[in-house]
Image 1: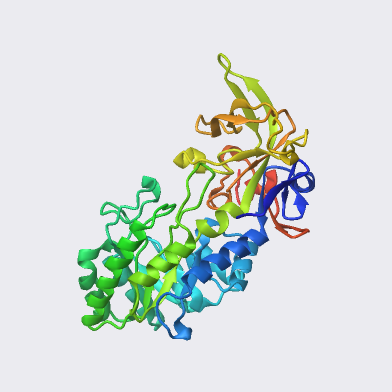
Image 2: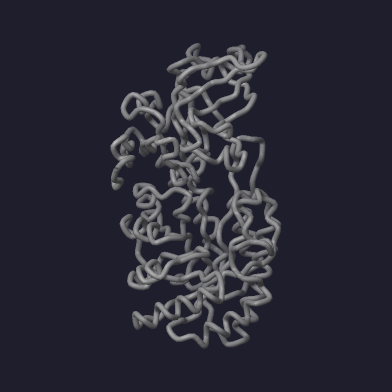
Length: 433
C-alpha cells in the first residue's frame, strides 16, 4: 500500500497534488510519502517481532539499509520508528549519526572498508562490524589495537543460495565478491579469537536484493542456524544473527512478492528455540513504493516509422535502475484532464498511445519505458515514475553536468523540501581551472 492516488483526475501524494510540488520546486524531483514510510516500517517491524530471543532486551532489530535512500529526513523518520541502520561507508555512518541514530544500533557491512572508516565507526561505538574476509579481520584488528579498542565483529558468510534475482544484485552465490564461503567460516572465527582487539558477537549473511519468493530466505536461515550452533559448540559466544535484507517489492509489473508477514512466520519457524538476537536489513521494502520521481515532458517526437518518443526532463542520471538493470517502473500521467480516473469503470478511458519514454542524457540506455501504452502526452505535462524511492536519489549522479534533483517529503498536508535542487554552480564547487 502507498499514499499516492488520483483525486478528481489528478495524482496526489497524501493531501497534496503533485502539480503543486512541480510548481514549487520544479522538476525532476523525488517526492516521498511519510505515511507510506511509516506504514512499511511498522508492518515489517511487527512481522519479525516474534523471531529469535524471548528476552525483550534482545528483541529483533531492523537496521534500515542506508544505501537504499539516505536522505536525513527519511533516516530520521525511520529512527523514530525504532529502526537502526545498516551502513556500508563512512559517509553513511555520518548520515545515520546526523539523523540521530544511536551508535549501538548501527551495523557496518561492505566488502572494502578503509582504515579511516573503521576508526570512525570504532570511535562511535557501533553495534557490529560485518567482516567480509579473513583479511578484513586482520585489518580491523590492527586498527582496533592502534586505538586500544575492542571491535565487535560478525563474519559475513556466503551460504551459496541462489536468490533468483538480477545477477547484479545476487550476493550469495559462490562467485560473489561478498563474504566468505561457508566452508571457511569456522576457521575464520578461530582466527578472530586469536586476533587482539576483536570480539566475535555475531554471524551474518545477505543473499541478495529484490527477492520475490520465500524459499531462498528459508534455505539461508536454515544454513545459518546450523552454522551458528557449530560455532557456539566451538566456544564462540555469538548473540546476534544478521540475515541481511532482500525482500522484494512490486514494481507494478505483475509480480506479487512474499509479504513481510509470511517472511516473519518462516523465520520464526526456522529459528525457533535458538536464543539469538535477530538483525535484519530492509531497505527497498521500506522506501521503494514510498516515493515517485516527478518529471515534466520536454517534447514528443516521431522516430522511424510510427515509433513515438516522449522526452522527459528526468534522465538516467536521476534514476539509473532502468538503464542499469532493465528495471520496470510504472509511469503515470499526473493530470488526467478529462477526469478519467474518477469515472466509473464501465466508462471509456481516453485512448492510449504506445510510446518510448526517454530522458535527455546522451546515452541510448537513457530510457524509462519502451513501447508502453500511456495516455497522450504533450510538452509541459507532468509524469510520475512510480516506485522510485529505493536506489533512486541514492544512485543519482551529475552525468552530462546535470544537477541532481530536489527531494520533497509530504506528511499529510505538510510539504518539506528535504534536499534543495543542485544548482549549476554546485557542479563546479571544488574544481579549479
